[in-house]
Length: 432
Image (tube, rainbow, N blue to C red; front, side, top):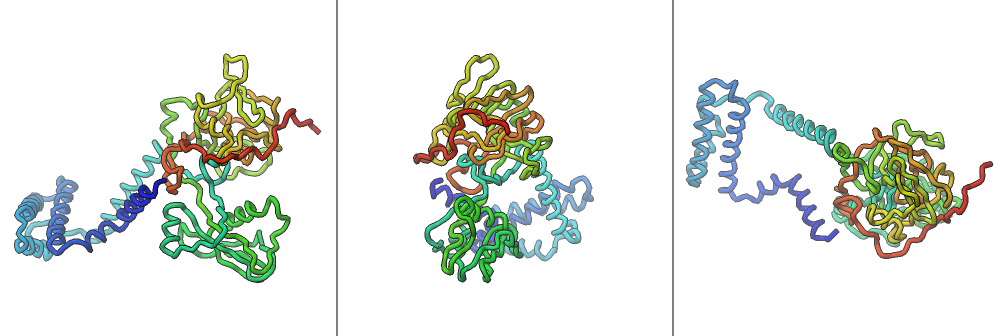
Protein backbone atom coordinates (compact mmCIF):
# COMPACT_ATOMS: atom_id res chain seq x y z
CA UNK A 1 0.00 0.00 0.00
CA UNK A 2 1.39 3.50 -0.83
CA UNK A 3 2.75 5.38 2.17
CA UNK A 4 0.47 8.38 1.51
CA UNK A 5 -2.57 6.11 1.84
CA UNK A 6 -1.32 4.83 5.20
CA UNK A 7 -0.71 8.41 6.38
CA UNK A 8 -4.28 9.39 5.43
CA UNK A 9 -5.69 6.35 7.25
CA UNK A 10 -3.61 7.19 10.35
CA UNK A 11 -4.95 10.76 10.29
CA UNK A 12 -8.53 9.52 9.98
CA UNK A 13 -8.05 7.17 12.95
CA UNK A 14 -6.41 9.95 14.99
CA UNK A 15 -9.24 12.37 14.21
CA UNK A 16 -11.86 9.75 15.11
CA UNK A 17 -10.45 9.35 18.64
CA UNK A 18 -8.96 12.79 19.36
CA UNK A 19 -10.48 15.15 16.77
CA UNK A 20 -12.88 16.95 19.11
CA UNK A 21 -10.17 17.52 21.71
CA UNK A 22 -7.61 18.78 19.19
CA UNK A 23 -10.03 21.15 17.44
CA UNK A 24 -11.12 22.45 20.84
CA UNK A 25 -7.52 23.22 21.81
CA UNK A 26 -6.71 24.87 18.48
CA UNK A 27 -9.79 27.11 18.42
CA UNK A 28 -9.37 30.81 19.07
CA UNK A 29 -11.35 32.38 21.92
CA UNK A 30 -13.89 33.79 19.48
CA UNK A 31 -14.27 30.48 17.64
CA UNK A 32 -14.76 28.66 20.95
CA UNK A 33 -17.40 31.21 22.00
CA UNK A 34 -19.54 30.73 18.89
CA UNK A 35 -18.97 26.97 18.99
CA UNK A 36 -20.49 26.88 22.49
CA UNK A 37 -23.56 28.76 21.20
CA UNK A 38 -23.87 26.24 18.38
CA UNK A 39 -23.71 23.43 20.93
CA UNK A 40 -26.53 25.00 22.95
CA UNK A 41 -28.60 25.39 19.80
CA UNK A 42 -28.02 21.77 18.78
CA UNK A 43 -28.95 20.60 22.27
CA UNK A 44 -32.25 22.50 22.24
CA UNK A 45 -33.07 21.28 18.72
CA UNK A 46 -32.43 17.73 19.85
CA UNK A 47 -34.77 18.19 22.83
CA UNK A 48 -37.49 19.47 20.51
CA UNK A 49 -37.08 16.58 18.09
CA UNK A 50 -37.03 13.95 20.81
CA UNK A 51 -39.53 15.19 23.41
CA UNK A 52 -41.93 17.43 21.47
CA UNK A 53 -44.86 15.10 22.15
CA UNK A 54 -44.37 14.97 25.92
CA UNK A 55 -43.15 18.48 26.89
CA UNK A 56 -45.67 21.02 28.20
CA UNK A 57 -46.47 24.04 25.95
CA UNK A 58 -44.43 26.52 28.03
CA UNK A 59 -41.29 24.42 27.62
CA UNK A 60 -41.86 24.01 23.88
CA UNK A 61 -42.26 27.77 23.46
CA UNK A 62 -39.14 28.49 25.50
CA UNK A 63 -37.09 25.99 23.48
CA UNK A 64 -38.20 27.46 20.15
CA UNK A 65 -37.43 30.98 21.35
CA UNK A 66 -33.99 29.86 22.57
CA UNK A 67 -33.19 28.26 19.21
CA UNK A 68 -34.28 31.43 17.36
CA UNK A 69 -32.22 33.67 19.66
CA UNK A 70 -29.07 31.56 19.46
CA UNK A 71 -29.32 31.34 15.69
CA UNK A 72 -29.73 35.14 15.38
CA UNK A 73 -26.78 35.89 17.73
CA UNK A 74 -24.51 33.52 15.80
CA UNK A 75 -25.45 35.14 12.50
CA UNK A 76 -24.70 38.69 13.76
CA UNK A 77 -21.22 37.58 14.90
CA UNK A 78 -21.00 40.21 17.64
CA UNK A 79 -18.57 38.86 20.26
CA UNK A 80 -19.92 40.96 23.12
CA UNK A 81 -23.50 39.94 22.42
CA UNK A 82 -22.43 36.32 22.01
CA UNK A 83 -20.61 36.32 25.35
CA UNK A 84 -23.65 37.78 27.10
CA UNK A 85 -25.90 35.15 25.48
CA UNK A 86 -23.56 32.32 26.44
CA UNK A 87 -23.48 33.40 30.10
CA UNK A 88 -27.26 33.59 30.18
CA UNK A 89 -27.68 29.99 29.08
CA UNK A 90 -24.67 28.79 31.05
CA UNK A 91 -26.13 30.14 34.28
CA UNK A 92 -29.61 28.78 33.50
CA UNK A 93 -31.16 32.27 33.62
CA UNK A 94 -33.82 31.49 31.03
CA UNK A 95 -37.35 30.91 32.26
CA UNK A 96 -39.51 27.96 31.25
CA UNK A 97 -36.70 25.87 29.78
CA UNK A 98 -37.08 22.20 30.79
CA UNK A 99 -34.78 21.34 33.70
CA UNK A 100 -31.92 18.99 32.86
CA UNK A 101 -32.70 15.41 33.94
CA UNK A 102 -30.72 13.84 36.76
CA UNK A 103 -27.74 11.71 35.64
CA UNK A 104 -28.16 13.10 32.12
CA UNK A 105 -24.74 11.86 31.00
CA UNK A 106 -25.70 8.25 31.84
CA UNK A 107 -28.90 8.51 29.82
CA UNK A 108 -27.22 10.10 26.81
CA UNK A 109 -24.35 7.60 26.77
CA UNK A 110 -26.75 4.68 27.14
CA UNK A 111 -28.79 5.98 24.20
CA UNK A 112 -25.67 6.18 22.03
CA UNK A 113 -24.54 2.73 23.17
CA UNK A 114 -27.92 1.10 22.47
CA UNK A 115 -28.15 2.65 19.00
CA UNK A 116 -24.56 1.72 18.16
CA UNK A 117 -24.99 -1.87 19.33
CA UNK A 118 -28.29 -2.17 17.48
CA UNK A 119 -26.70 -0.97 14.25
CA UNK A 120 -23.65 -3.19 14.72
CA UNK A 121 -25.66 -6.34 15.41
CA UNK A 122 -28.09 -5.55 12.61
CA UNK A 123 -25.34 -5.05 10.06
CA UNK A 124 -23.53 -8.15 11.30
CA UNK A 125 -26.63 -10.32 11.12
CA UNK A 126 -27.90 -9.13 7.74
CA UNK A 127 -24.96 -7.94 5.69
CA UNK A 128 -21.32 -8.04 6.80
CA UNK A 129 -19.65 -10.08 9.52
CA UNK A 130 -16.13 -9.43 10.83
CA UNK A 131 -13.73 -12.34 10.60
CA UNK A 132 -10.09 -12.87 11.53
CA UNK A 133 -7.82 -15.23 9.61
CA UNK A 134 -6.41 -17.61 12.25
CA UNK A 135 -4.02 -19.82 10.23
CA UNK A 136 -1.83 -19.77 7.15
CA UNK A 137 -3.98 -22.12 5.05
CA UNK A 138 -4.92 -19.33 2.63
CA UNK A 139 -1.47 -17.75 2.25
CA UNK A 140 -0.43 -15.73 0.39
CA UNK A 141 -3.97 -14.67 -0.58
CA UNK A 142 -4.80 -14.06 3.08
CA UNK A 143 -2.41 -14.28 6.02
CA UNK A 144 -3.10 -15.76 9.42
CA UNK A 145 -1.19 -15.06 12.62
CA UNK A 146 2.46 -15.60 11.75
CA UNK A 147 6.01 -14.75 12.77
CA UNK A 148 8.18 -12.65 10.46
CA UNK A 149 11.88 -13.21 11.29
CA UNK A 150 14.44 -10.42 11.08
CA UNK A 151 18.22 -10.30 10.85
CA UNK A 152 18.68 -7.42 13.30
CA UNK A 153 16.72 -6.10 16.29
CA UNK A 154 14.05 -3.51 15.56
CA UNK A 155 15.60 -0.09 16.07
CA UNK A 156 12.41 1.98 16.35
CA UNK A 157 11.32 3.88 19.45
CA UNK A 158 7.99 3.41 21.26
CA UNK A 159 6.12 5.74 18.90
CA UNK A 160 7.45 3.88 15.86
CA UNK A 161 6.51 0.55 17.47
CA UNK A 162 2.99 1.85 18.09
CA UNK A 163 2.52 2.88 14.45
CA UNK A 164 4.11 -0.37 13.30
CA UNK A 165 1.35 -2.18 15.18
CA UNK A 166 -1.37 0.26 14.14
CA UNK A 167 -0.53 0.02 10.43
CA UNK A 168 0.88 -3.48 10.01
CA UNK A 169 -0.22 -5.36 13.19
CA UNK A 170 3.46 -6.01 14.06
CA UNK A 171 4.54 -6.74 17.64
CA UNK A 172 8.32 -6.69 17.64
CA UNK A 173 10.34 -9.01 19.86
CA UNK A 174 14.01 -9.79 20.35
CA UNK A 175 14.51 -12.82 22.59
CA UNK A 176 18.17 -13.66 23.22
CA UNK A 177 19.18 -16.36 25.71
CA UNK A 178 21.32 -14.87 28.46
CA UNK A 179 22.38 -18.28 29.75
CA UNK A 180 22.60 -21.67 28.08
CA UNK A 181 19.50 -23.82 28.39
CA UNK A 182 16.38 -25.09 26.67
CA UNK A 183 13.04 -23.39 26.02
CA UNK A 184 10.21 -24.73 28.18
CA UNK A 185 7.88 -25.05 25.17
CA UNK A 186 4.79 -26.14 27.08
CA UNK A 187 5.56 -23.90 30.06
CA UNK A 188 5.00 -20.63 28.18
CA UNK A 189 2.32 -18.83 30.14
CA UNK A 190 0.31 -15.60 29.79
CA UNK A 191 0.91 -12.66 32.09
CA UNK A 192 -1.44 -9.76 32.96
CA UNK A 193 -1.42 -7.21 30.14
CA UNK A 194 -3.45 -4.54 28.40
CA UNK A 195 -6.40 -5.63 26.22
CA UNK A 196 -5.33 -6.32 22.61
CA UNK A 197 -1.66 -6.32 23.69
CA UNK A 198 -1.13 -9.78 25.24
CA UNK A 199 2.21 -10.76 26.75
CA UNK A 200 3.71 -14.09 27.73
CA UNK A 201 6.54 -15.36 29.91
CA UNK A 202 9.06 -17.68 28.27
CA UNK A 203 11.54 -19.76 30.28
CA UNK A 204 14.94 -20.36 28.67
CA UNK A 205 17.22 -22.27 31.02
CA UNK A 206 17.06 -20.58 34.39
CA UNK A 207 15.97 -17.19 33.04
CA UNK A 208 12.43 -15.89 32.33
CA UNK A 209 11.69 -13.42 29.54
CA UNK A 210 8.66 -11.25 28.85
CA UNK A 211 7.64 -11.19 25.17
CA UNK A 212 4.61 -9.86 23.26
CA UNK A 213 1.98 -12.33 22.07
CA UNK A 214 -0.13 -15.14 23.51
CA UNK A 215 1.49 -18.47 24.49
CA UNK A 216 -0.01 -20.03 21.34
CA UNK A 217 1.54 -17.27 19.19
CA UNK A 218 4.98 -17.90 20.70
CA UNK A 219 4.69 -21.69 20.38
CA UNK A 220 3.66 -21.31 16.74
CA UNK A 221 6.59 -18.95 16.08
CA UNK A 222 9.04 -21.41 17.67
CA UNK A 223 7.64 -24.26 15.59
CA UNK A 224 7.83 -22.21 12.39
CA UNK A 225 11.46 -21.34 13.13
CA UNK A 226 12.76 -24.62 14.48
CA UNK A 227 10.14 -27.38 14.46
CA UNK A 228 10.86 -28.73 11.02
CA UNK A 229 14.64 -28.92 11.14
CA UNK A 230 15.79 -28.75 14.76
CA UNK A 231 15.41 -31.69 17.13
CA UNK A 232 15.58 -29.67 20.34
CA UNK A 233 15.18 -26.14 21.64
CA UNK A 234 18.57 -25.96 23.34
CA UNK A 235 20.32 -22.58 23.06
CA UNK A 236 23.77 -21.33 24.00
CA UNK A 237 24.26 -18.17 26.02
CA UNK A 238 23.96 -15.13 23.72
CA UNK A 239 22.16 -17.12 21.00
CA UNK A 240 19.04 -15.60 19.44
CA UNK A 241 15.85 -17.52 20.21
CA UNK A 242 13.33 -15.31 18.37
CA UNK A 243 13.98 -12.05 16.57
CA UNK A 244 11.42 -10.37 14.37
CA UNK A 245 7.74 -9.49 14.57
CA UNK A 246 4.51 -11.30 15.32
CA UNK A 247 1.87 -10.23 12.82
CA UNK A 248 -1.84 -10.65 13.47
CA UNK A 249 -3.95 -12.37 10.87
CA UNK A 250 -5.82 -10.38 8.24
CA UNK A 251 -9.08 -8.93 9.56
CA UNK A 252 -11.83 -8.88 6.97
CA UNK A 253 -15.53 -8.44 6.41
CA UNK A 254 -17.64 -11.29 5.06
CA UNK A 255 -20.55 -10.51 2.76
CA UNK A 256 -23.44 -12.53 4.22
CA UNK A 257 -25.93 -11.03 1.78
CA UNK A 258 -24.23 -12.33 -1.38
CA UNK A 259 -25.64 -15.85 -1.08
CA UNK A 260 -29.21 -14.50 -0.86
CA UNK A 261 -29.13 -13.30 -4.47
CA UNK A 262 -26.71 -15.60 -6.27
CA UNK A 263 -25.35 -19.10 -6.04
CA UNK A 264 -21.74 -19.79 -5.04
CA UNK A 265 -19.28 -19.97 -7.91
CA UNK A 266 -15.93 -21.68 -8.42
CA UNK A 267 -13.13 -19.55 -7.08
CA UNK A 268 -15.11 -17.73 -4.38
CA UNK A 269 -13.18 -17.21 -1.14
CA UNK A 270 -15.85 -18.54 1.18
CA UNK A 271 -16.46 -18.54 4.93
CA UNK A 272 -18.43 -21.48 6.28
CA UNK A 273 -19.19 -23.22 9.58
CA UNK A 274 -17.90 -26.67 10.48
CA UNK A 275 -21.19 -27.85 11.99
CA UNK A 276 -21.71 -31.51 11.12
CA UNK A 277 -18.26 -31.97 9.55
CA UNK A 278 -16.10 -34.82 10.84
CA UNK A 279 -12.38 -34.33 11.35
CA UNK A 280 -10.78 -37.71 10.48
CA UNK A 281 -8.11 -37.24 13.14
CA UNK A 282 -10.81 -37.27 15.80
CA UNK A 283 -9.63 -33.87 17.06
CA UNK A 284 -12.06 -30.94 17.21
CA UNK A 285 -11.78 -28.27 14.54
CA UNK A 286 -9.68 -25.22 15.39
CA UNK A 287 -12.81 -23.06 15.36
CA UNK A 288 -16.41 -23.00 14.18
CA UNK A 289 -15.71 -20.68 11.25
CA UNK A 290 -13.33 -21.66 8.44
CA UNK A 291 -12.29 -19.83 5.29
CA UNK A 292 -11.21 -21.60 2.09
CA UNK A 293 -11.56 -21.25 -1.67
CA UNK A 294 -14.59 -22.96 -3.16
CA UNK A 295 -13.22 -25.13 -5.99
CA UNK A 296 -15.97 -27.71 -6.59
CA UNK A 297 -19.68 -27.17 -7.26
CA UNK A 298 -22.36 -29.88 -6.90
CA UNK A 299 -21.77 -32.75 -9.36
CA UNK A 300 -18.28 -31.49 -10.35
CA UNK A 301 -15.54 -34.08 -10.60
CA UNK A 302 -12.15 -32.85 -9.39
CA UNK A 303 -8.57 -34.02 -9.94
CA UNK A 304 -5.18 -32.74 -8.78
CA UNK A 305 -2.53 -33.70 -11.33
CA UNK A 306 1.08 -32.53 -11.18
CA UNK A 307 0.20 -29.65 -8.80
CA UNK A 308 -2.66 -28.36 -10.97
CA UNK A 309 -6.39 -28.58 -10.30
CA UNK A 310 -8.72 -29.95 -12.98
CA UNK A 311 -12.51 -30.11 -13.14
CA UNK A 312 -15.06 -32.09 -15.14
CA UNK A 313 -18.30 -30.16 -14.81
CA UNK A 314 -21.71 -31.77 -15.42
CA UNK A 315 -22.15 -32.34 -19.17
CA UNK A 316 -18.39 -32.28 -19.90
CA UNK A 317 -16.59 -35.42 -21.05
CA UNK A 318 -13.00 -34.45 -20.24
CA UNK A 319 -11.15 -32.83 -17.36
CA UNK A 320 -10.06 -29.25 -17.98
CA UNK A 321 -7.68 -26.99 -16.09
CA UNK A 322 -9.22 -24.44 -13.75
CA UNK A 323 -7.72 -21.17 -14.94
CA UNK A 324 -8.16 -17.43 -15.34
CA UNK A 325 -11.52 -17.87 -17.09
CA UNK A 326 -12.95 -19.59 -14.02
CA UNK A 327 -11.40 -17.21 -11.49
CA UNK A 328 -8.11 -15.23 -11.40
CA UNK A 329 -7.25 -16.95 -8.10
CA UNK A 330 -6.68 -20.28 -9.87
CA UNK A 331 -4.15 -18.70 -12.24
CA UNK A 332 -2.24 -17.22 -9.29
CA UNK A 333 -2.10 -20.55 -7.47
CA UNK A 334 -0.92 -22.40 -10.58
CA UNK A 335 1.74 -19.74 -11.28
CA UNK A 336 3.97 -20.97 -8.39
CA UNK A 337 5.05 -17.38 -7.77
CA UNK A 338 5.17 -15.22 -4.65
CA UNK A 339 4.36 -17.97 -2.14
CA UNK A 340 1.90 -19.98 -4.21
CA UNK A 341 2.94 -23.64 -4.63
CA UNK A 342 0.14 -25.02 -6.77
CA UNK A 343 -2.13 -27.79 -5.44
CA UNK A 344 -0.69 -30.66 -3.42
CA UNK A 345 -1.46 -34.29 -2.76
CA UNK A 346 -1.65 -34.08 1.01
CA UNK A 347 -0.24 -36.90 3.15
CA UNK A 348 -3.02 -38.54 5.16
CA UNK A 349 -5.82 -37.05 3.06
CA UNK A 350 -8.91 -39.07 2.08
CA UNK A 351 -9.52 -37.46 -1.31
CA UNK A 352 -7.43 -36.21 -4.26
CA UNK A 353 -4.42 -38.20 -3.03
CA UNK A 354 -2.70 -38.72 -6.40
CA UNK A 355 -2.73 -37.93 -10.11
CA UNK A 356 -5.25 -40.76 -10.63
CA UNK A 357 -7.52 -40.08 -7.64
CA UNK A 358 -10.53 -38.01 -8.69
CA UNK A 359 -13.52 -37.04 -6.55
CA UNK A 360 -17.11 -36.27 -7.57
CA UNK A 361 -18.90 -33.66 -5.44
CA UNK A 362 -22.32 -34.88 -4.25
CA UNK A 363 -25.47 -32.84 -5.01
CA UNK A 364 -26.02 -29.93 -2.64
CA UNK A 365 -22.37 -30.05 -1.48
CA UNK A 366 -19.26 -27.94 -2.14
CA UNK A 367 -15.55 -28.80 -2.16
CA UNK A 368 -13.17 -26.40 -0.36
CA UNK A 369 -9.37 -26.10 -0.68
CA UNK A 370 -6.89 -23.76 0.97
CA UNK A 371 -4.67 -21.74 -1.38
CA UNK A 372 -1.71 -22.96 0.68
CA UNK A 373 -2.74 -26.55 0.03
CA UNK A 374 0.57 -27.97 1.32
CA UNK A 375 -0.48 -26.76 4.77
CA UNK A 376 -4.26 -26.72 4.83
CA UNK A 377 -6.90 -28.82 6.57
CA UNK A 378 -9.69 -28.81 4.00
CA UNK A 379 -12.09 -30.98 2.00
CA UNK A 380 -9.31 -33.41 1.09
CA UNK A 381 -9.47 -34.56 4.72
CA UNK A 382 -13.05 -34.07 5.91
CA UNK A 383 -15.04 -34.04 2.69
CA UNK A 384 -17.58 -31.62 1.28
CA UNK A 385 -19.50 -28.75 2.88
CA UNK A 386 -23.32 -28.60 2.65
CA UNK A 387 -25.04 -25.51 1.27
CA UNK A 388 -26.57 -24.60 4.63
CA UNK A 389 -23.08 -24.28 6.18
CA UNK A 390 -21.99 -21.47 3.85
CA UNK A 391 -21.88 -18.06 5.58
CA UNK A 392 -20.75 -15.72 2.81
CA UNK A 393 -17.95 -14.57 0.55
CA UNK A 394 -14.89 -12.68 1.78
CA UNK A 395 -15.47 -9.01 0.95
CA UNK A 396 -12.51 -6.86 2.01
CA UNK A 397 -9.52 -6.75 4.33
CA UNK A 398 -9.88 -3.76 6.66
CA UNK A 399 -6.74 -4.29 8.77
CA UNK A 400 -3.73 -4.37 8.70
CA UNK A 401 -2.80 -1.85 6.01
CA UNK A 402 -0.67 -4.30 4.01
CA UNK A 403 -0.63 -4.84 0.25
CA UNK A 404 -3.69 -7.06 0.76
CA UNK A 405 -5.74 -4.19 2.22
CA UNK A 406 -8.97 -3.65 0.29
CA UNK A 407 -10.95 -6.09 -1.82
CA UNK A 408 -10.10 -9.73 -1.13
CA UNK A 409 -8.30 -11.86 -3.74
CA UNK A 410 -7.15 -9.07 -6.06
CA UNK A 411 -3.39 -8.86 -5.40
CA UNK A 412 -1.05 -10.42 -7.93
CA UNK A 413 1.80 -12.58 -6.54
CA UNK A 414 5.28 -11.14 -6.07
CA UNK A 415 7.59 -12.01 -8.99
CA UNK A 416 9.77 -14.66 -7.38
CA UNK A 417 9.55 -18.39 -7.98
CA UNK A 418 8.14 -20.64 -5.23
CA UNK A 419 8.03 -24.18 -6.65
CA UNK A 420 6.10 -26.96 -4.86
CA UNK A 421 7.67 -28.48 -1.76
CA UNK A 422 5.72 -31.76 -1.87
CA UNK A 423 6.08 -34.20 -4.78
CA UNK A 424 3.15 -35.08 -7.00
CA UNK A 425 1.93 -38.61 -6.22
CA UNK A 426 1.56 -40.61 -9.44
CA UNK A 427 -0.65 -43.44 -8.15
CA UNK A 428 -2.98 -43.82 -5.16
CA UNK A 429 -1.30 -45.09 -1.98
CA UNK A 430 -1.86 -48.81 -1.39
CA UNK A 431 -4.10 -49.71 1.55
CA UNK A 432 -2.44 -51.60 4.39
